[in-house]
Length: 468
Image (cartoon, rainbow, N blue to C red):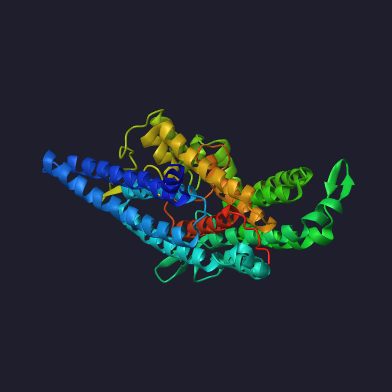
């Protein structure tokens, strides 16, 4: 009886069962969207509305579940011991994202679905490539990976393929395809930091000098890591992608503390960050404007000025309007009609960039504080499973890599949610798996694949060598 129960509740069967809620969310979400849209049409009858909404929504839900099942089969046969909850949590976030983006703009949702397919292909490719030797093979190419990641972050500043949007250089454009190189860089830098700290953490702990009660790490070992990390931060500041810079800095301090166990190292880092933030706010116009908008979002002068506080203020209004339970799904007023001088009617945005930067404000408005808290709880569980993977990992590099990747996700959620809720100045980081953004979706699937590879090797049963 016990053996049968263990077989039914095996890790892979638990993972399979965990995919059902994501498919139900897709089906329920699209049903609500179609019913609302067809109810607004005076020609639609109630029976036709329900029948059409049910059939199309079931088709979308089945298609989403089919994609997840393919990824599940890859995990089942390539990583049989991997964490059973990581991928279902990602599927839930992806289902919320595809429904919310479709509710905002169906065209963008189709593009998001295409990027999700590409992300799942790279997800499977990463698992199949690393399933035999694990993530340890990445250590051999740490400097190449770091150089590639840093080089990618410079591309948006190159003429012809990069352009400035809202004061920052984020995307590169090749034909009709756009990509954010910082999404690739975040994984590359974490791989380098995990590998370098794995080799030098003992020296950093034992050879440091004491100054004013704090341990100062030796520059001979600390210097190369600072150079690579500083180059990444410098290129991100060059492109004015401050949200990603903050995300990198948080992951860097977290890895440094986990590797050395010295609280003084991240404490020194926080002091340096405060000094750097003070200097950047006072000397970089784009950052200074963001800081003023954060301080005074309702100032009439800032509210009306281009690039001022309009976006942040509207996000705060939207969240306040949602209240505890929300206004109802598909009820946010995102645009309003304006008649031009030539009597042409156009629609102006009430909440700028709702599919990307402001999607959390839309969620709070429609689903209320309870819906937003549920979404953040899913993120919390995802980060917790990543850190559990780090605890179970059997080698130092895997521990540090899983820790760094988990903190990258946590910092990314904190930066965008904190910006929208006015905890910190607003930046252009996307909400992982939920907000519209092809490069973010693709690279976050690769990130989860790396966590699954680490968890598979960490959860394998110990095997004693046979005696001759």
